[in-house]
Length: 173
Image (cartoon, rainbow, N blue to C red):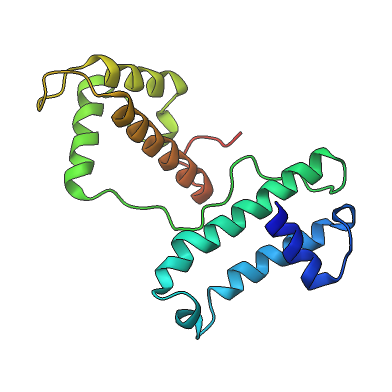
């Protein structure tokens, strides 16, 4: 958070972290987003994708962390989002990957026809099946790292879906 507090202090002239307000955090977030639209961004971050995938994401994370701490200190009034807004648009599964997901759903839960139908129990059952079901390639269940990667992917899918909204999506808590 030193990076974030330091940048806000340099920009605003405040001399202590206790002076940071919601407006400072909002302004800093806006500056990060506007920086990505600069015509000369490629001079700072060649290729530009490096900024979008790394720096901007890290800066937004730092600002979110600062907002969480300041909110719990009672210093800012805006409660931070429980799920950070995604920097990238949600990705669409390639057809072959979608076919795997469709096959698993058809075999295990044919009643699921939209994201809104998916429950916590469905996700837990799927995660459990990763630890128990032998794979075709090795004949053994997935290892811990592979399970974590797949579960993280599912988690990100629901985070992205929640930010998009829509009637076929689960309610956000």
